[in-house]
Image 1 (cartoon, rainbow, N blue to C red):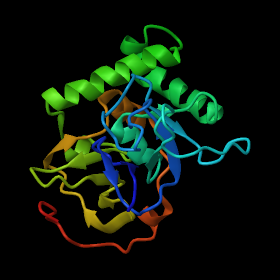
Image 2: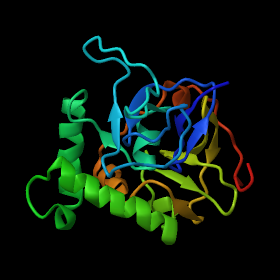
Image 3: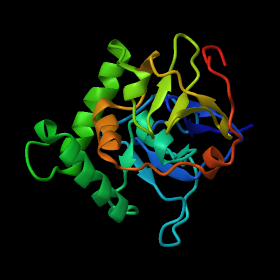
Length: 220
């Protein structure tokens, strides 16, 4: 039976046999039997490399942080995670530079500490549970995840297309309806980063799907 350690763009942790391309954590979320008992332990939600300096870990070891996995960086950012300072330092620096430029009022300066960034992202994650973040689909930049209506289906915005997310990859491309009002899953400050031109790493399957001429996607 697969472990419950895969993160969706909604930020939920699910059990699936599909493998991820990135790892991360939110602290120790599991009990001694390896079962998830809390959604997070701290505000530091990070994205890590699968391999770093030859380190080996026992997955879900008692008392250690819970190893979580993501399809790709875009999915992890949508869930509210950010690049790790240690194993992904260059990517963290790129992300922080773009984040500060896109969110000068929140940053309050020319740079921002990892701790302050974590606190801001945490507020956005919590607010998303209480208040739906909505936008017109034509204004949503590439790399953002959205959902429409009550479908509980996450879609990746990729140029003029939408791609349905699954633990194993992405579905066929759909033409995105420009005037549709959608719920945005990606934190608002990160959406601003995408709008500025920062490109999230997206799983190669997103670029291998054949074009789909469907115009309606609700319930797809």
